[in-house]
Length: 237
Image (cartoon, rainbow, N blue to C red; front, side):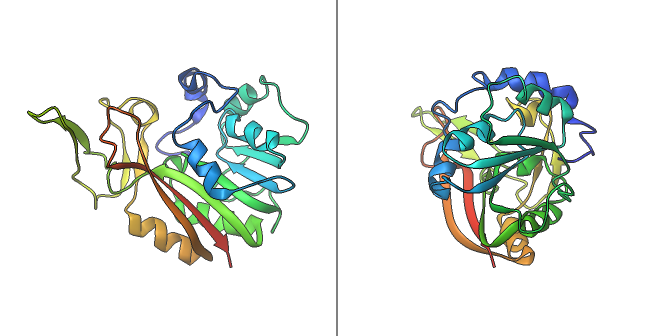
């Protein structure tokens, strides 16, 4: 996670844990579950949960048979993670996604980053670090706000027929943004917007080959025919 402009996620850690609600199970999470389906079985794999927050996904991966290292830049987030029942196959590390200095080369079979790339200032550095800690052929799976439909100035409007439409502008303006009109982390903490080309070209530069892409709608009342989140799996060359 970035140290600027957010300074530290420690100040938001307790709020985030409360915002998630059930910090133990994924429940029917509309974004995490499709990403997990996209990456496939993890039994027997060594997986890095990058920007793991309070460890909800980390613990789920371990319950599915993986040995998991949850990594986050916020010490307070990791303190909260430690308060939950945790499988013996889970280890937490405080580290920066830009460098992953605590991780050895080719340490992992897979790296997962669930709805957190928007929090990382230098996307190229994060992609490069993810590639470095993966074995050749290992997978990198992530989900993020769909960059085409979730720009800083995107919104939803209701027409006279009662249909919900999503409006988008400012797509090409990349960088940090924060809006008091948004619920969840974008309103509380902010996020980084990038174009789809920035995501895909960054993966290629870091040494990844695109394997799978899934476009995920938001729960109602968002228009179901408009993707809200994008999930990607890429493999290290």
